[in-house]
Length: 149
Ligand code: SF4
Image 1 (cartoon, rainbow, N blue to C red):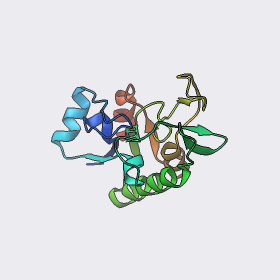
Image 2 (cartoon, rainbow, N blue to C red; image 1 turned 180 degrees about the vertical axis):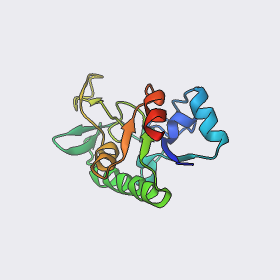
Image 3 (cartoon, rainbow, N blue to C red; image 1 turned 60 degrees about the vertical axis):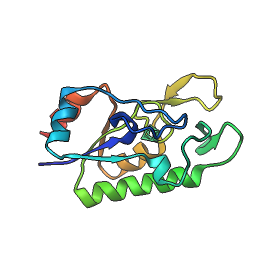
């Protein structure tokens, strides 16, 4: 059975910048977990960033945290490790947390740390899509399941 890459925070792991998680409860997710089909990653932690960490946003193709530190390299490394996982497990579908500068698939924050989102995709989502992985957000599990079929 095909595996699915899922943002670690959506699975209840406290890996977010604020030390919290964003667990979702959905029958499809439970089914995939039971079937052993889920591969989890937090690209930001995989890329070497700590928990907690300063929130970061995409600004002019770089990723900068709210203290002004450029964290692009860590985000790029996390994206590459996510891609490697997909290649190792022959994964072509991912469910990633919307609006994150790593995992966002339709929207990301606008770079002003004002809480405003704009159309766009995170660093990991962009790399995965460039390599043919279909990326969905946490509200699109049915679409992801259809894609898996
Ligand atoms: Fe969740 Fe992705 Fe942010 Fe990690 S990088 S906390 S998996 S949204």
